[in-house]
Length: 308
Image 1 (cartoon, rainbow, N blue to C red):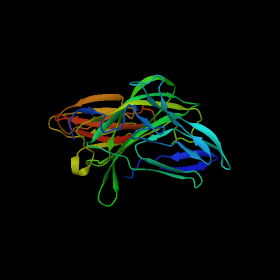
Image 2: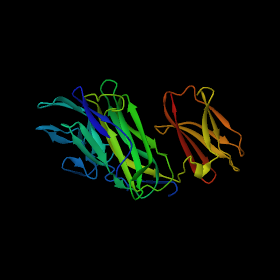
Image 3: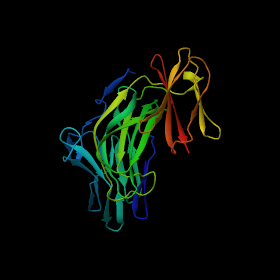
Image 4: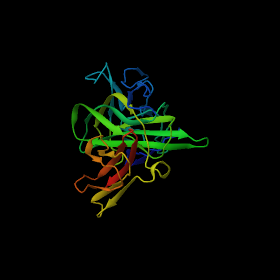
């Protein structure tokens, strides 16, 4: 993640590269303080925020909210705020919540997010609850990254993110399927939330995001990889209006089309054999989607595609 000042606004460029198998399990213990009940020094215990004082000006975009939590006594509130900094001028800073360490240098216009927390399994879905009240046409971002130390550097094994816009004054559950880029057991996890959509442009003052009661869903994970299943393939055909899916299996498989919010768009039972299946996608909105195939043993094969 890099941070730059442009037109006296704070812009974060989000990059899901993080520095630092059980069957059908739901659990939250790999996420520290998942209900945001414990706070210390103005931050939820186990989490890091962008809260800080810069040249005498205090920014607190992340606060403890005790009014209307989803569960327990508190939730985390993230708000995009603007303050005038001496010499620098007006700076707009989104609420940022991360399991990694956030370092921000306003004067040099740089910033980093490094590390995360240990993870004991291979999560396949991040779930939780949120409320969102954006300003103008802003939207929030939720993301997760999983990595592993290879002895020399850190490899990114999996990541996922989603953006949510519109008015959501009541608590709603979100579901974020995790796309694995390569097979393997991660050792580190970072989860991040942003009150403004920093991928789409400048943050908008006044956007508010509340998050509460997070948990992870675990399951058997596989990836579309030559060494894993060379026969599994997803191909765009007919000028990108359709997908051709091939996954020979003697027992047949279930094919699912899922959006990045976790909504099941389509499900098809494929017969045994190697006959390709055609999925019509011309009506899908431009976004990222997941094609998931599940065989009789419950093993999943997942591949992402972008509908332009």
